[in-house]
Image (cartoon, rainbow, N blue to C red; front, side, top):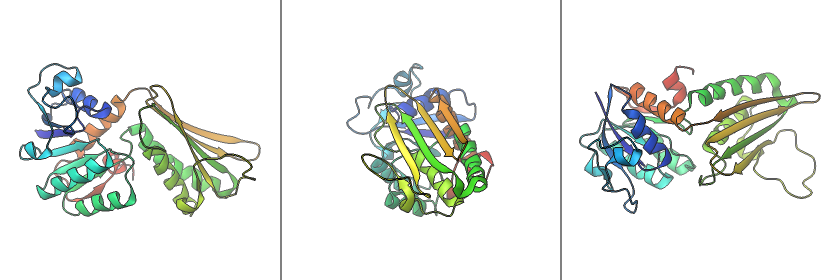
Amino acid sequence: MIKLTVCGAAGRMGSRIIALSKDYSDIRLVGAVESKTNPNVGVDAGVMAGIGQIGVTIVDDINKVVDETDIFVNFTNPEATVEYVQVAKKFKKSMVIGTTGLNNQQIALIQECARDIPVVLSPNMSIGVNLLFKILKDVAKVLGDDYDIEIVEAHHRMKKDAPSGTAIKMAKIIAEALNRNLDDVAVYARKGMIGERTKHEIGIQTVRAGDIVGEHTVLFGGLGERIEITHKASSRDTFARGALRAVIWLTNKSAGLYDMADVLGIK
């Protein structure tokens, strides 16, 4: 039995992971962690998630649940993530991380921790999106430099980081396939007399509106045709189930930094 603790328990993703974990016979929720200022601290995690009393109280300190935990799932903010992964490293616990908006320094710290513990790090836990990651690499290689590339992502109004981690990963995959440095070619906004589009730029545009769960479209525009590849999520459950699949996969794995391609066996 895998003993699971959810960090960011009262968030949109954390609450769905808690609710859906009851469907997995090999997972037992033993802990739920939130920030000290969150009003759900002290509340039963099942009540918060809408599934009734489960006997797991939301706490405000990860150290209170670390001893009874095998694996942490973390959907929080970048600052909390680096704090929690260092606790996991100290106590030799595994971690699945779905936090987005991490900067290069924070990612480097996670990579360092993963030398000692198993970590799955992915900006998107959806099975469909991770299949799309694989497809985009192949499409970009075939089309080469003759097609302009634009990525448009849309999320709900409450999302704090932009562009989405998924859009950034899509852009990185495409840039690497075309031997481009994303930092040099990424264009995040256009306004005014900007001149003609350059040959190698990769546009990444953001929409924030209403309750959009998550939509990503990659457009390859050629002369006389265009190819559009789109993924639309209609429920956060697809991400939550992907995270729980990663939890099961990570059990008994050796230390290292993994992603959802490893989990799905599509690398």
